[in-house]
Amino acid sequence: MNPETFSPSEFSWTFDRGVARIALDRPERKNPLTFQSYAELRDTFRALVYARSVKAVVFGSQGGNFCSGGDVHDIIAPLTKMSMPELLDFTRMTGDLVKAMRGCPQPIIAAVDGVSVGAGAIIAMASDIRYATPEAKTAFLFNRVGLAGCDMGACAILPRIIGQGRASELLFFGRSFTAEEGKAWGYFNDVVPADRLESHAMDAARKLAAGPSFANGITKNQLNMEWDMSLDTAIEAEAQAQAICMQTRDFERAYRAFAAKEQPVFEGD
Image (cartoon, rainbow, N blue to C red):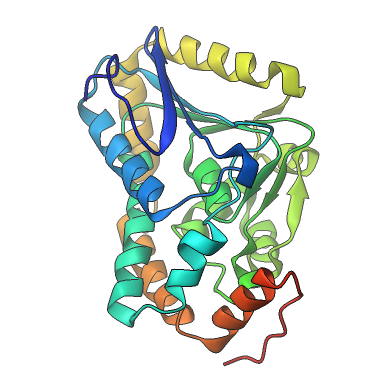
């Protein structure tokens, strides 16, 4: 990867003074993920391992929102028709994005404005530092669409950030939490006005970029390694569990209700 000339097709990319900025760029849909953007993000973070000129990364918001999760029509609808092997390929691929984010040596700062839900919340969670605006609304909403709260490492990472009890509440109920709640819990490092979010995140990233980047990479690596359970093991377990949930009728009911703008009625099968 040459960060000076890199031109992804699925998200925006800028690079200046050692800092790369990434942002999903479909503001009319609150920046959802697609199969293609998942894969290109994964490949990008993998490539950052060898991009020594990139010292820090900001994963930013666009159009007043961070990310609305997997696109309902581009991802959720096809998943309801996939076989188990295909579903497991998908859940492993999404987990690979988190592995790539945790595995790249550069510190990642998430600059969260507006909606940050589902896989969008996971991207922020998988970042090293998180800043938010007062308008930020975050939800690990997998339960609300008939899936397990475990997804892309959520059960491994989220309790380590905010504690087991708070993580359990969020993953069981799928409720949203405010920026101030997130700051009080230690999920957000700071809450700043919307007009300062970008500069605040970039200033922090530039400070990291000016620091000892190799040492920062070692710090990040140790933060990953010094867990009781390896992240790979946790993500694989969650990938299998999530793939099983994706074959339930409740998952399909949730999609159909969402498409009809109705509340899903779950039946436990």
